[in-house]
Length: 221
Image 1 (cartoon, rainbow, N blue to C red):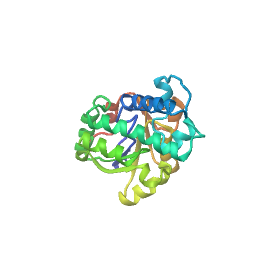
Image 2: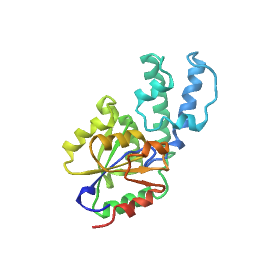
Image 3: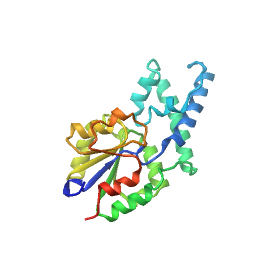
Image 4: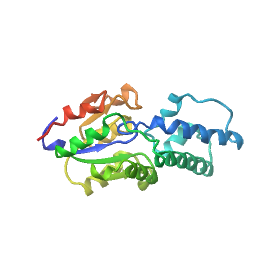
């Protein structure tokens, strides 16, 4: 995968660069315990895989799947509980990137690739990661779905394209990323180590099991 068409890399974040299984399930369980105590949810236990299936979803889609009958007030209140817990964990140094992520980003930058992040997350969440990992040394743009009222990624891309003219390759682990690529006629790399199912990555022209494989797909100039 070489040539001018690969110059800009548009990364998903959770499940692609960040192993959010370290911070999301504990925050979700804490929130759910509060919902049980408040009498708005039944007592039950949650397996990690039941929780991580929502990673990559935006907040609105997650709640529609998790508890479709929740009121807007409940979604806002308990969703904020999850967000606060995760952001505190990030700021306490508890977030973790996938192994070798920083060295891969450093090498891609050295090779001349411009890199951006588009995530189905809230602004404060992405900003906390940006500061925690000093991402400004690698990335030239950050896009959180909250900024655009949680519209689909494939629609947000029109803004990215206007602000960063040129060609893109999408790198992600969920169907949202593949839909972004497909609808905008972009090549895509699917990350099998993330949280999506195998079929979600059917559109991807290449799939990887380890982030270091990006260095094989995007050689130096």
